[in-house]
Image 1: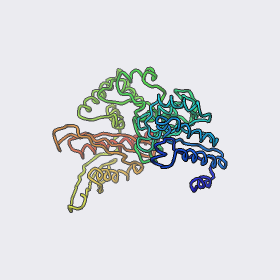
Image 2: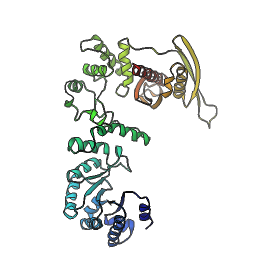
Image 3: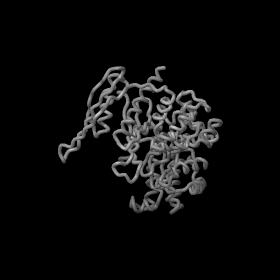
Image 4: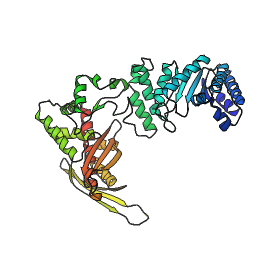
Length: 440
């Protein structure tokens, strides 16, 4: 067999192959007899085991096969056992099995199979993590999964949830403390490689996994984090976030102030002023849950501590459509003042907002070269006032980033260019503030 020879030619210490456990697949996909399939499993694995130190057998569709024809599904595993493989991996390939079924079927397997077992779960019913944990509780020692659960259809079992569940909930040593502390970093690194936005609601590693919004919650975690956190976020390399909104109380404001190293006290009139300003701005449509950089700048402004890095003298944006079969061309001209010096420049872009972004960067990079490291990661627009058509108020949320961090800023106006300008200016001011603090 050319495939088996190619596996040997790779000269690896371990080889994994899969075979059919479900009689439907044998008849309808392979179109061979049930007996031929069993013989093929046995012969292939025996051949590999004579030449490779470790051989793993993935029993594809095993749980569906067991539910349809338990005797035949177990017979395919017994063929692998006769070949003396190192591990038999039970696969929920269609992802349709529930944890209670996993437990029951593994118990039946353990009565017939003496070899070590593994689990390979898919997430089509949102059960991949639960099924994997259930299998481990039944004594299964080999787990197959992916970082962030990336995989075909609805994904595979998410190792970023499985590993901390095993370590912190089942008290099984999987990783060192230092390794577990890099879990969030690894999650985001893989998301970056896959060119996918990290899921902020992902357990353990998501940016919202340890986020607190209601004043009652924030007041409680300030006294004892266990009141609303099932583990310390630092154990998985995450951190606590206190969100600010019109639901916020003084506890939220004080927690955020401490996070930003701003000295505020509960009885300080500025605390009430910031809270009232926050509520007023959110009534106008501002939202700071995804724009914490804008909120930090708001707090510093209230304290009179916000440095003015540049002053806008004016800008103008032109959009021209010169031919019907071509996209419009946008150009932004801007004039700013930095430390008494006026810079007047222009830039083109893919639309008016992109042109404005390019123009302001072009004008400021002469004074602040570090802005070359900054990029606009995400740009979102939400219409706030329904029923007003093109005159509706909009909220613009911008996510920006550099080589170290990402941050969100917000702007609100009936004019989308003005809303975008507010968010762009905040993103630049925050970058300059952040870099200034890093130097101290």
